[in-house]
Length: 252
Image 1 (tube, helix red, strand yellow):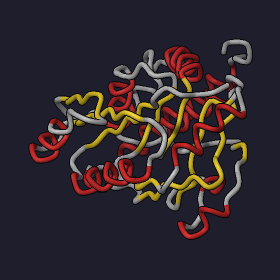
Image 2 (cartoon, one colour; image 1 turned 180 degrees about the horizontal axis):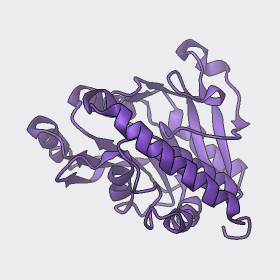
Image 3 (cartoon, one colour; image 1 turned 90 degrees about the vertical axis):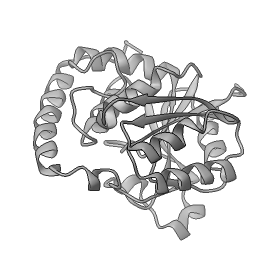
Image 4 (cartoon, one colour; image 1 turned 90 degrees about the horizontal axis):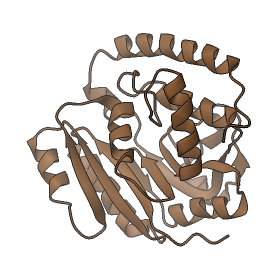
């Protein structure tokens, strides 16, 4: 199998124009595989909103502005409805991809047809399986991830996306890739990651592919973080319980 079509890179940004500019500059400098950008303004202030709107040319396929900050899940769900490519990237705006990052990720879907997600290594994450020092990135190896895989930078197949959306809907999160009832970037990616594994897809972290991650940059300006975490923790435990009752192996 050969993959030749463009990969859509979806980025949601709530303010933090400095980080978005840095992320886009790194994508344009270090991406060797054909791509197009889908930029979502998550209710930002005028400066960031204007910058995103002004990007509507060249490598930017489209932009969209949400009236209010809808959080991680609803922001990315909105962006993914604008994507029609067979493969797409969910990328945090506080990331800086290294040279060749996407080419290495896309090769996973050529080598492993049952792959659902391919992730680069990163410096800042709660998952030991994908964490490494920036200086050690070239020495990393490709492996299957068992357990949670934080959505710092995911390359996802359309097949995995479609199957996951059906199960998220059964879990009360709407026909979405990320459960829409989660608040502001806590645990919704864990639910999606668990659903993907339950469906029988494999999740890979890819050797030699690295994305620097600032970490919690948007969450730091939200406030009331403890409230969001507490509510989402309850939702996560309920989703885990319901997911444990499902038999999904034949529903890909």
